[in-house]
Image (cartoon, rainbow, N blue to C red; front, side):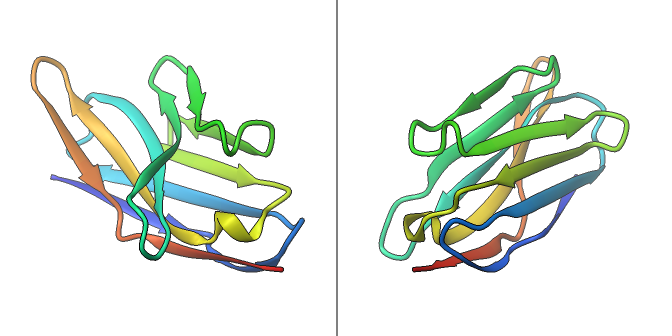
Length: 118
């Protein structure tokens, strides 16, 4: 089993910044990717950003240039720096990780609320 603990959500005004953290523990022998999804009320969960074990990153078009994902492999932690926040970024942000070598399992964090006021 893998446990993911998120932190860093909160309330911020538009144009402000927040930094989310997600630490993985447990059976994390082969983390292939860590990342963030978000889900706004009444909307489907959408991928925000990913960080692979090789250090490659990927972003949703809606956050490119504003959000930066980074990782600390030694701490099994991934960070999401969110700048120039907009009200439409308001959502519950979920950390996830994919673990495995030949078969893969995905694990999710409990979610952290990000609210951006206009």
